[in-house]
Image (tube, rainbow over all chains, first blue to last red; front, side, top):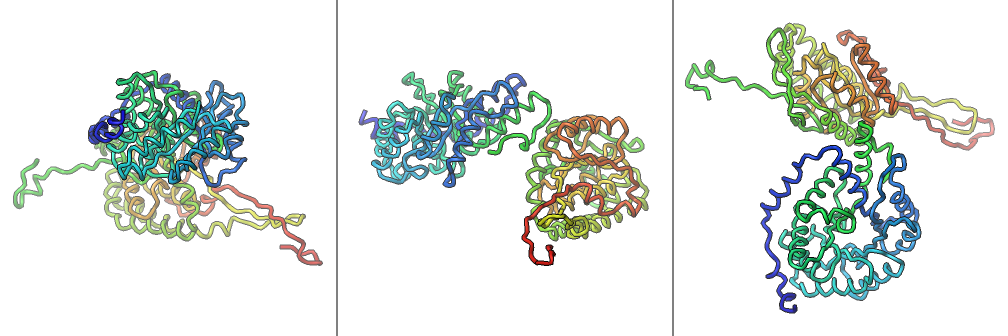
Length: 302
Length: 302
C-alpha cells in the first residue's frame, strides 16, 4: 500500500484532453423527449445542494434558504425537495433545526474553506465543530498548494484524517479544479481523494473561475468508474459552481448515465452544488406543464 | 467558380448572394429551427429568410431581459448619444437601404424618402431621450407632509410586431421610442419584406447599441403570435396594424400576466406620427411618497 501511495503520479493515468472535449460535446446533442425531460428536471431538483457560502451570510439568510429547500415552489404539486442545504460551519445548528423532519440533509464546508490554507489541527477542529452540531455531510477542500508541490502524501493523509474526524458524516472532497491547471492533475487529485476514503469528490468551491465544467467532471467521473471497476466500491460526484441552467444540468445527468450508469442517478451518489439552478429548473418544469415560458418574477428570489 | 480574366471578368462573375440571418443579443445566428422561407416581390424571390421558431423567441427574450437593466441605468444623455449614432450609421449606409427597399417593391424616389425619414425619426427620438422625463414626470400636490412625485420607468421587455408594409420606417418609428424610454425589445420584422430589417440589425450592431437591447427576428406572424403573447417574461407588446382576429388572440394570450398591449394603425410617413407620447406608451409611472417635515410655520412644504 505504501508503495502505491508514494507513487500517486505514476499510478494515475494521463488524460487525453482533446478526446475528453470531443466526448463532452456529444452529451449536448442528445434529444430528450418531453416526458423524460420532466423526469430529468425533477431528478435534478432532488440532487441539488442548495448553497449559500458568502461572507455576508446571516441567520436570516440561512433560515430563508432552509425554508426555500422545503418549499421550492408550492404553487405546483409534485415538486421534490432538494437533497441538502450547504452552509458554513457556524450556521449548521441553525440549519439543522430549520430542516428538522424534512429529510433534507445539512452539509457544511470545513477545513478552512475556501483556501484550505491552515494547519491540520485547525482543519480538524473546524470539521468537529460542524459534525458536533449535527452536519450530515462535510465538504472539505484539499491543499492545492501541497498538490502542486508534489506533496501527494500530505494531501492523502489530510483527507484520511478529515475522513476519520467526520465519523458517520459523509465526506465530500473539493478538488478546486480551477486551480489545478491540467486535466492530468484533476485525475490525480481524484485518485488521491478516492484512495484516501472520500465518499464524494467535488469539483469546486464556487469561489474560483472556472468552476465546474463538463470536461473536468467527465475526468472525475472516469476516475470514479475506474475505481468501481477495480474495487466494486461506489463513490459520489458533485459538480459545483457555474451550473445555473436546467439544460446544462440535464447534460450532466446524461454524462453521468453514460459514464457510470443508472445506479448513480440519485442523490445518494450525485449532487449539484448550486444556488440559482433550482429556480431555472422550476421555471422549466412549469413551462413543460403550462406551455408558456416563465419569468423569474414569479419565483422566489435566489 | 466562374472564370474571370480581364475586362470580361465582371460580366462572368458569379454574384454572391447574402444570407439574411436574425439578430439576437448582438450576434447574427441562424434560426435554431434551421427553417427558411422565400418571400417574393412581383415574382422575384427576395432571398432565403430565417423562419424563426418559438425557441428563437425564447432566446431573444433572454437576451433582451439580460440587457434591460444595463440599458435603463445608462444616463439618459448617453442613450440619446447612442440613438444619434444609429442615425449616423444608417445615413452612411443609405445606398444599401435604398437598393433593398427597391428590391422590396418601392420606386427609387419612395425608397430614398423612406430612408431619409427613418434617419430623421431616429434623431427626433435621440433628442427626446433626456427630455421626456421632464415633460411627463410631475410633483403632485398632496394634503399630508409628503413630497409626492411621479416619474416614468420603462416597462421592461417589449415585443414589437413591426409594420408589414413599411419595412424600414415602420420598424424604426416604433423601435426608437421604445428604446429611448429605456426598454429593450424583440422585433418581429415585416414578413413579406424582411430585407431592410436585418440590414438595420447590422446598423445596430455597429453603432454602440449594447447587444440584446434590440433583437430582430424574421418569420411568420401567425406562427409566433401564441408564443410571444404567452411568454411571461415579456412585459408589453407593440403591434402595427393588426388584423382584428390577431389582436383578439394576442389580448387573450397576454391576459395571463397582464401584458400592456399597444396597437397602432398609423401612416408613419405622416410627420405627426412622431411624438413623445409613443415613449410614454411604453413607460409606467412610479409615484413616490417621501416623508418630509413641516419646514416652516406658515405651512409651506415643498
